[in-house]
Image (tube, rainbow, N blue to C red; front, top):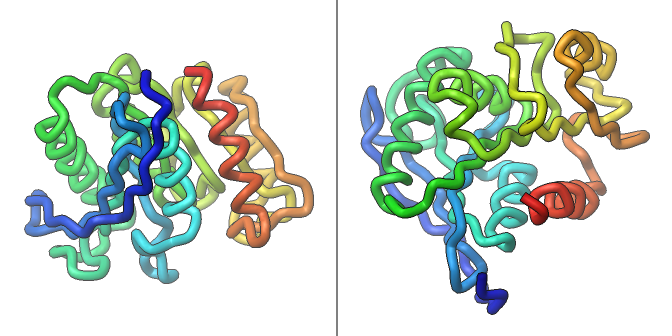
Length: 214
């Protein structure tokens, strides 16, 4: 794999979704060779979550530097995307449409990572269950909103779960209670809240460390 780097920037594109057009940010691989696809899902739009979220961009840029092309959609009812908010139900159909678009653009790429922050982790966990974990290289869950949604189980050996010790939105206790029956490891950032303020570089470094060995 080439290690030659370039400086890609986010490009706004439109994707045909199940209830209309979805606006999406696409970030090409920072390497000359693209090795995989990553889809990144934003936090709860009823609380201001969009594809402009800093953690969404951090995840996209981190994976881009490893050779992935990143797709960060505004799910239904967000920004200029068609439809209305469905609390993580119809949004899975939206993300499946983004995946189909990405695979059509890159038919030779088999490596797929699903990443999300907060509400976005619920969307991606459901998508992983729908398409089957064998189709997914890995799942990156940042601040999973397990106290707000009925999460499916996730593939333990493929899932990176990161949570802030002092998360004021989704308590660490609820995450541990969800993870424990699955024997799912949890990476805890000490003294960190839900939005990882001041810790985005550390978050990027950790994801990079975990994913560059895959």
